[in-house]
Image (tube, rainbow, N blue to C red; front, side):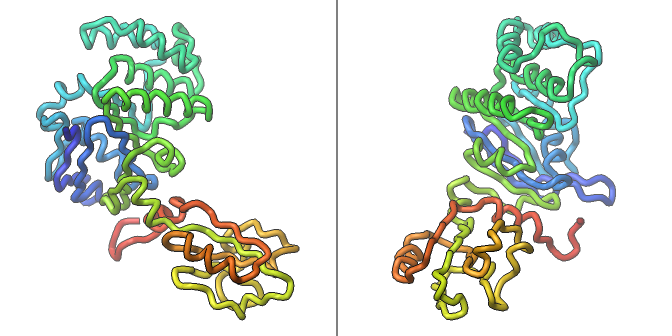
Length: 320
């Protein structure tokens, strides 16, 4: 079952671009990562889905209902945390849970207090005395207490320490395992890489990639660090197909190690080659075994490199 479906979804702000031609399908039980740099259009898309903004054109549906006209009914089954959390200064976690209990017409206090304990929140501490991270945790507890069918989180780890980020990730995995659906917005690769089944990348208000994590890893390059023997020369090596040269010592090819940010010890820089491999590593490993190199290190597929390419490339005439 498709929980979220958008078709040619657009939202503009007068002459300013918001989002354009966004097509998404998110299925039940899926953890979906919505990845992009700040200002790419993630929050605009989410606000349209939540019925907080009306689409300029196109359609957005959740649970088969129109997000704008059926917004109140949809929101009863959605747990939402905005990218910029705002809470009443006098609110405590316990008061907040009592308020949403009245909204949902059932007692959410027991489940909410369990979540508060899990997130190490004091249930009777007022928001005005809380740190930014604790305010974020209050918003998460209130969003998750009613066990919503769909969870939409807009950069929810902002202000959370690493331990609390792990706690949140575990909660979301447990919910997805029980059939709940999660849409998780972030500009940080490591968050979506460890959590999500599928990822959409948005840039300049448009979806530029929508694929599974495994499929993206197949596209991602691997970094190879080759250490030569003292008697070997980088200029005399015929590198195999599928290898891009990033740095070779004592040649004009590639960039300097410092320029590409690689921590090559100065004592080894004259013997170190930095390469980028596209495709599987087995053919390169067979070739390298015949070359008598001093050492070869092949990294895992680098989604960071792949995503940076999506982030940094721009279309003519696109907004910065």
